[in-house]
Image 1 (cartoon, helix red, strand yellow):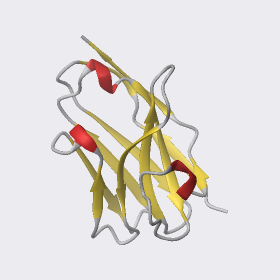
Image 2 (image 1 turned 120 degrees about the vertical axis):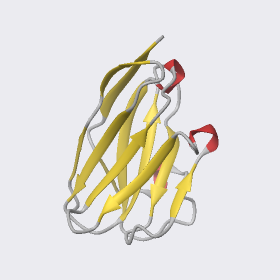
Image 3 (image 1 turned 180 degrees about the vertical axis):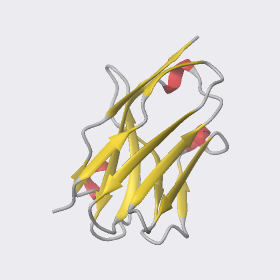
Image 4 (image 1 turned 45 degrees about the vertical axis):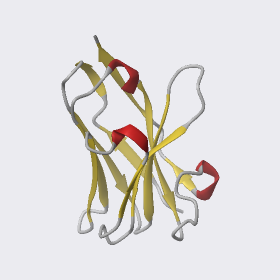
Length: 121
C-alpha cells in the first residue's frame, strides 16, 4: 500500500506561482492530475520513479515542471505563470509499474486526497 500526502495548494493571482508537493511512502511512477468543477479529471504531468523521464500534457509544458527528490520520495509540481483556467483540485497519483498510458487515470493504483489551486484574475 502506497500512501500519498499532498500539500502546497492555495489561492494565487494570475501570473503567480505555486509548488505542489506529494510525499509517497514508496518508489513508484508518479503523475499529477487536476479536476475543475463540472469537468473530467485530466492529466497534467508524470515522472518516472528515477526522475529521469518526464511527461507533460498540452499547454502546461513550459509553465509547469515536474520533478522528484528520490531521497525524500517526494514529487513536486512547480507551476508558473498561472492562469484562471488552471483553477482545479490537483491530485497526485502513483502507479506500481510504469503505465503504458500515463494520461489515463485508470493506470494509477493510488491517489492523494487532492489539493485546491485557485487562480484569481
